[in-house]
Each structure stands twice: as C-alpha cells, then as structure tokens.
Image (cartoon, rainbow, N blue to C red; front, side, top):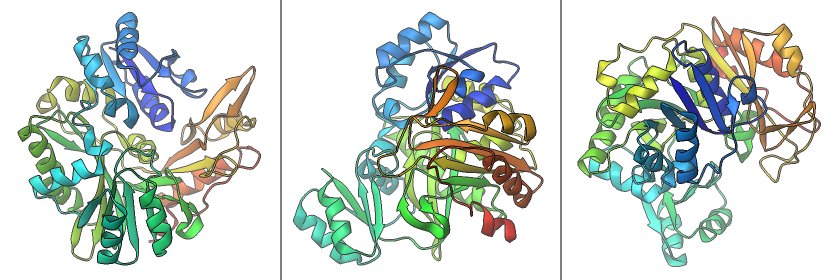
Length: 416
C-alpha cells in the first residue's frame, strides 16, 4: 500500500514512524513534512488546506490511502476532496469535522446523543458574556468557538481576563468548570464501528506543577495506572458510540479519529471537548504502545470495514513523551536556532527512546527550530518510571538555545 500523510508536526512524525514500520506499506510520502519525517518518508510540498492540491498530489503519487493529520485541513474539507478523487482517506468530512471546528456544534451533538458534558452558554454579545460568567462564577472556562490550534481556551479565576478573552472571540462558549483529572481517549471509527485506543494523559500548562499559560501540550504518558480499569468501556458506552451514532443519524457520518478530552469528575465522566484528529502529544505515546500494524486499521476506517479487523493488540510497555519547546513558547516563539544532539540520541538511546520532530526544518547540513513546540522525545519502558528515565536521559542530550521543557511529565503517575 502506498500511503500519503498530510501535515508536518510531531503527530505526523509519529504516524509516519508507525507506518514506516508496517510491512504492508510499500511507499510512504508526507506533505509538507519536516526534517525528522524526511528520514522515514519522501517529502512533497503542498498547501495542506487546498483540497484539490492534496487530491492532485495523491493521484500523482498513486497513493492508495491518504491520512490527514491536522485539524485545519479536515475542517476545510480536504478529506472530501481526496475521496471525490476516488482515493480512500482517513479523516472526517468537513461537515463532520465541525465536531472540533465549532464548540457550539459539538455541544449540540452531545445534547442530541445524551453525552455527559459541562453545562454551557454560547455567547455572541458582551451582555451574554457577562451573564454567562456571572452564572458560573470562578474558575471561569472560556472557549473560542472556532479552531485555535489548542490555544483558544482560557481557564482563570480572574473575571477580567476571562471577559477579555471572550470579547476577542466572534462567538464563544462559556461553561462550568469540571473538577478532577483529565484523560484523552482516541477512537478509530468508520462511522458505525468504534475501536477505542488506549487512554493517555497530557500536560497543557507550560511549566512544572501545572503552572504557567496553556500550551498545545508539553508531554504525555500512557497507560494510566490510576484510572478505573472499566474507564474505556464506560466512555465507549456513554460517549464515543453515542456520538458516532448521533452524527450518522444527522446525515453527517464521522469516519476517522474521534478524540474525547474527558474530565473524571466527582459526578462521573464528562466530556471537555472533542477533536476530529489524533491529538499531539498523546499520539506519540499511544502509537508507541500499539502492536497492531497501523495502515490496515486506518484503511479499514476509510473503507468502512473495521468490523472485519481482529481486535487491536497492545504492548505491555509504558510510554512517555517530553516536549522540548522553543524560547518564549507559548508566546511568539524564536525560530532558526540550530538543534544539536539528535545523532547522540539515535546512537545511545535507540530503540527505547527516539526523537519525533514537530517544528523543525533543514538548513544545509543543520536542523533548526521552526516552531513553538520543536521536538517530542519519546521513550518506552516496562513501567512509567523506566519510560520517564529514558525520555529525560535522551532529552538531556538535545541542545537548543533558549529551549525549555517540563521536568514532571508522568511523575505523579510513576510514583503511584
């Protein structure tokens, strides 16, 4: 099978790494990719938001499966254009991707499906914003209705900060704060069948002890030793299957990757948000633990044949990923700094630890930073403590001027 992956971040590097290890994949392409992905896939330039351009590239390459990684191309309908060209595509239609593209749409679907979530108000005027903030009180949870690359959510005790964020959005969802730990659960679906993956937990705040501003994610781990063993079954029954069934009932079937961000509250599981694609950095640890070859599962989603697949197999190993971010991230990041130490990790830590590239590019013989989150150092071990030690040992070999990372990814879970 010839496979084309669309995107250029650490999520796409994780996908490409898994696909490159799949014996059924005979050719692997990525557009536009990054400096790390170039080691496992053939790179091609493309405007990832241009569905016609992506479909043309897939046709020219003879791709038999296209995997759309990021959310913006999915919401823009890139998967529709690829399917219209007669090529199987892993990823929801533009209409179904509104589950991520619009928080208000997602709340409406959850209401129709009876999915437990936070009470909320959709606001478009200052008066509605003030009323909603007053109704819920602190801590205030304010979400931009549209896509915001993981940075559209503000959780704060400061009512003025909450109001300022709300006023900066065209349409905003203000909701009650959900207590309890957060869990990410991915599921692969063909619009009818739902295959849950293993749960993970990510770390959104920039600094240790969950201090600092929200980011796109500074690290993740899997499995979750503290979680109820029945959690996945419960989320399947109360969240994932009802949501897929509701979207099909509405005439907007969802195939691809359904991501549920969950809060395990004192009153039970509640959905914080849905995403329409693999999450970053959770993908890095979930795919590190997946034993089943990836391409056939993604193709089964694209072709509507997941019911023909055997159950997914998982490694017993734990996995941890630590994000190395550039100077000033999540503010305006500094780019163009050389990255050193990548060869050291490959020579001394493989195969148990490896580096997945996020914001990188090649300049001559050098690899330089090209984004906010630059690298995801990922490691496996027999338990979380072992995986953590390997991840941080490898991360310590990386040299990037002004960079920062969290030192406490998976620490509490590893200590039990």
